[in-house]
Length: 512
Image (cartoon, rainbow, N blue to C red):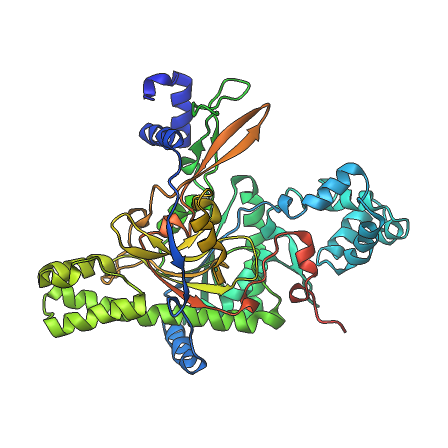
């Protein structure tokens, strides 16, 4: 399809988004040929792509982290645009029905509601209407309580971003997920001036409310922890939206005849990271937080991951400086190759050993001079999501990648067998080095696999459409980074995907 197939109004819609028309043509071509699945070679395992850090090495790594943090190298990046609506899916269905689907669920709801960190806020908004929540509980008015929780009549929680939901109870002030990330930042990104740099990405519809809450929260926690916060906010760029198509891969049009664009998934946030003036960036999801009483192990392993990155990065930078200076003999080159294989799990192509010294040096330089990430991996307990794998590349080599199930061939029994044999799971616990050996920022777009997209089917109005998601942020968007996986304890992974997750012991205060 060429641009001639688009009307002037279509082209204006494309321009208003800030999208290059050539990019739209490229997206339509992807729809026509389909998404190309990734070919798994084998799961990454301990000793084969995943590193276990022994307790004896932790003090050194923590020290390396602390030195880098004091120099102001650390920044925390939190994707926080996710809506809370999916968390409340079951409650919303019950509210629409006017009741829970069983007496057992009603009883559980009435017993549990007082355990949530937002219970005091619920009491307050009901009191503003002259209502007493305890009376509603006594009369078993579940649907009315749900209305005050989910709708604009009360807390409007089904509309809010997950970042602004009250997660945890404290004596002095109950905390939202966003506040817990500010607190975390004080423990592992603080520099020698007590400055903590944190960046959140939010949806455009929630930006104003988020900024207002953040402004107040950073003042409160700055005073509490003797820190100051450089807390910034961006939205997912409209220019990263992708065009939707119909079943025949033609541009989908809504009832008014306009072409439709959709957000392209978390891979679009690569542009937000790319725009940050960062050096070492912690990347973690908004809902993976714990109360203060459980933060020690989270903070420890954040420092271990960052320290390991600094340790390996120092050696990578030393090698790159040597290679760029030209003073590398055969013995030194052998040591460099050994480091690449043993510490970075870097495979080399067939015939590499027999190539000329200059070609081998150039190959290693090109492989090392790229963004670097250290990714925490937890033991697989059946949680939905991606995992660490060795992937077959088109040039015959293999690389370590974080892969989602929708990226593999669903019709291949061999690929499914490899998938289910994975021992570890991706909790989204990354530390990213985004500067080169000359301290210059990488352009991260050069290190993304543009072909690692996914196509899904969605319903819209009265029709069905196909939607295109860009390569996932920690999947295809970082496909050509140097990657090291490190095992971290399961205790560092405490996501809140549905409302009942907040009733787990890891999110509740200790009983008195």
